[in-house]
Image (cartoon, rainbow, N blue to C red; front, side, top):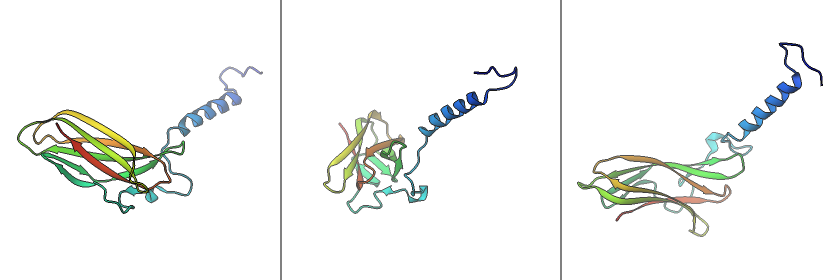
Length: 152
């Protein structure tokens, strides 16, 4: 191996560094499979027939609003659905030990494919809470979303 002149970089070192950077960056993208653009992404439940619990759901004094869940593809070929969930206590007293569960339900057999649970020890009156739920499933299956609140 030749030692480069002082102040000059060896081209093979530059090429190796570029390959390392490109390899690391390839795992950091959230891209759809070939032939699918961002505007083709599926919004669940708008594309399936079973009733999903998007929109506003009421469980006693707990009101849950789920605008939509959007499908995302990972570089490893797997998929997840992500949605922002808004929770409000409309009552006059705190709600204690509330668990908000998001279910990814398979259309073919109405079975749960994935569950995401978010516990809250206390939700004060008129306290708005917002969080993101991610549900993992197979890219080629049809799903719908159910979001429920369990309270003590």
